[in-house]
Length: 130
Image (cartoon, rainbow, N blue to C red; front, side, top):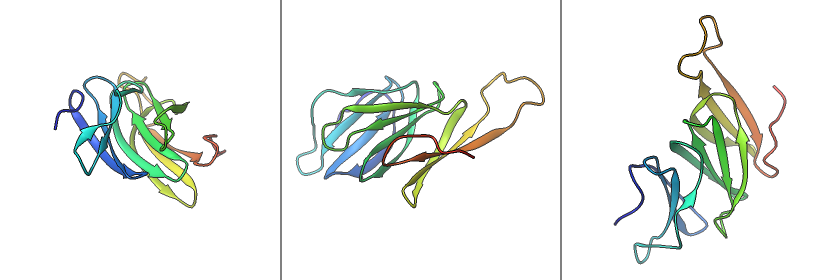
């Protein structure tokens, strides 16, 4: 099954498969019954990788742009792009919160923080205070 360049992650949500394509900064939506792509690939941030799904959306970590993209699980539209300020490498969902683990940017100054965990409210896409 052909998808975008360099598929890096896959998640099941809203009855479909969602594939993060790191090579062309997109997410493809696939019908699991037929194996066909649904619509055009969705443009997200740079180097999308890890993904997690909630009732309110598909969450995509874009390690190259330091962002998390929030996609509508029904329409596939981008609901928001959340700047996490580092290279998001891991995502999980717990208690209605999207937890994002991010390492420091390459070339960060000596002594800079090695990374951080950001919490995003899944219902609203708002970053929660530390």
